[in-house]
Image (cartoon, rainbow, N blue to C red; front, top):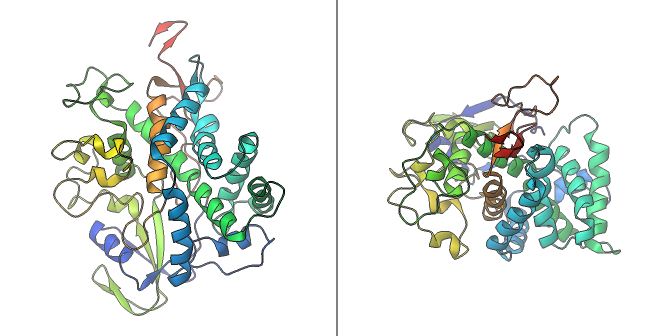
Length: 388
């Protein structure tokens, strides 16, 4: 889980307006991956997905992904994620949600909806996890061989004995990889944020809303608002890069052709010019004038339902501009199902007494770009010792 190393010195942008401006400017491109021959595993995949391409080629690849994901029913995705999470948490025993749920459930649900047979779901989840670890350059130590083999595992599962069409394999692999670490981070970071909310009874949910599954302050907001505020306050994807294809300007300074811009999404999401009191976790900021439940009942599942007041745009958790994340609606549906099921549980300490990590001090995976809890234990709100 690393990011592409810069070939030239980088300029860091942290203001919300500056980051949005670059993301909307076609003169700034993503660092592209070179094409590679089929059969070379991750090298081929990087050169074949929309994530690492630009121009017309990116447009063609992105259209395939958006068409593929757009055909899925977000309500069903959410329900499937909720049901699978509930099954994993049934009985109230202590569970490491990061190891058992945060990747396995979203990737598994999406994989089966994209053509992976149910009896190969777990095999493909493991393969996608391996590919995600080797997706960016340089890959983590030992990740490259596992990632190369994993591409073959996904191809075999999709092709049902035959080689799948390369464009289909690249589109499905890219979508599943994007649903892996980033969605796991969104799930984990949301649960951590909710667990740290003040205890005690809420003032009450807005009229017409269900109080939800959790007790306390988090019951004031729908799951969608919790996710939206987590994407702003503690986003799983912290940074992205753009390269100037020609001389341009950004952040009020000249940017020569070839210069690399490091767009600090996490810092921009706490810009006080856009988000008042930016360091406070407040899902209510995404509910100006009330929340429209029909936004989700009709299948329109995206953060456009949760734009803060005051202008300037919303959070940058899914990017912005000319190439926002094509899987936003899908990722939110999957994450909402997981979080909604998990809210009936409480954060717990590790089962091993020698693991000296208090439950309020969550460890995170090492990464310069992603913020994903390494371990996060949940248990039922009622145990053999009685209610907690």
